[in-house]
Length: 275
Image (tube, rainbow, N blue to C red; front, side, top):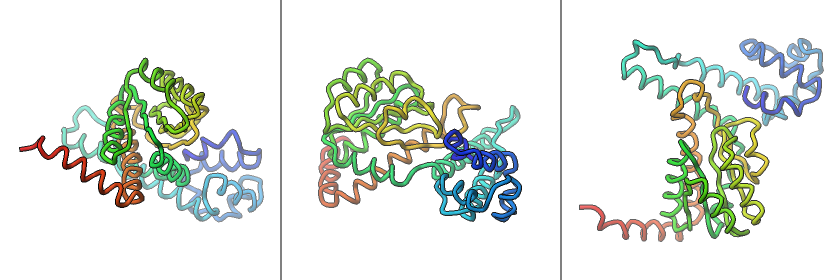
C-alpha cells in the first residue's frame, strides 16, 4: 500500500483506477485473478501487469503476495496501547510495532539503492552523518560503527555545525542525512550545501514524497507509522539502525583483510578500557 500511495501521482489514468480499487478493496485482491481485477477496473490484463511492475513486482502474482504479507503483518496483533495494559503487555505490543516496521521497511527499501549506498560509503575518504532530535542517536551509532572499520566517520548533531561541516566537504566525502519526516529544514539545507561541494548525499527517511529527496543522490526508505501514536519513534529508529547495520556488515565482508585489521586495531586500542 505504501508503494501505491508513493507512486500514485506518476501513474496514468488507467493505473490510477487500479490503484484506487486496490486501496479501497485490499482484502479482496488476494482472491481475484488478473482478469477479474482488470474487469473491475475497466482496464486490460496488460495494464494490471504494468501497474505491478511500476511498484517493483515481477507481475500480478508477486503483487498479490506482497499485499497478503502486508495484510498479515499489520493484523497480527492489535498494538494500540490501552490505559489498563500492564507494562509487559505494552512491551509485547512494542515488539509487534517494531516487527511490522521492519517488514514494511523491507518492502520499500530499494535493493540497488542500498547496495549503492554501501559501496559509496565503503569507498569514501570521509563520511559525515547528520541527525537531529531522535535521529541523533542513530547518527552517533552509525558513526561509531564506521569508525571501528577505520573509516573517517563523524556524527554531527548540531544544526550550526552541520552547515559548517557541509561547507567544507568535497567530492571524496559522503554526507548522510537522517530524517524520519524528510522535512527537517536543517538536515535538508545541510545536504543541499554538501551537494554544492560535489559530495555524494544519502538520505534515510520514511517512505513518501518529502523535501529531503530533492537533495539526495541515494535514497534509503523506512516505513513506520508509529509517530502517529508515539513521539519517541522507536520503530523508525530500529529500522534506521538496521539499515546502517546491514551497510556495516556489507563493508566488513567486502573489505576483507583490511576490515579485519581495522577491527583488530580497534579492539586492541580498547582492551585497556576494561577490567
